[in-house]
Image (cartoon, rainbow, N blue to C red; front, side):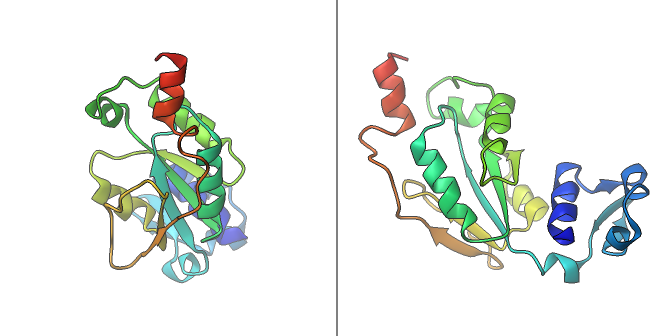
Length: 175
């Protein structure tokens, strides 16, 4: 799907840069419009794909994360995952095991994930950037973003959270 590929490209580069635009096939360029020297999917093309946004810390990847990401992907064509900032983890009272950039790379390597992005200090700016059609929250998350133009999905599927929770894993490891 051309629209999906172009949308992911525009997210990855905060708009497709002009030098990359000129290397795209003509049929791809026709799907884009220029804004402030960058290229973006035309609104009518963007409507052809369903974008899902979910997020989390993903500091110690475990089966609960995998299940959540597979379930989130069922709600759209493109799954964008916001990986929490290191500062967010520290504000919860612990140091991250892995830095944000490492966590982002690990999450993006997972099969259901189309793109992992770094979490924003201002979540509203992230919503503006991604413009999701749906926001998916895991069974243990509280919905804190509820834009009017996006469906809010609360997952109830979970793995044994007495074992597969990051805090429990860290406790068992003595971290």
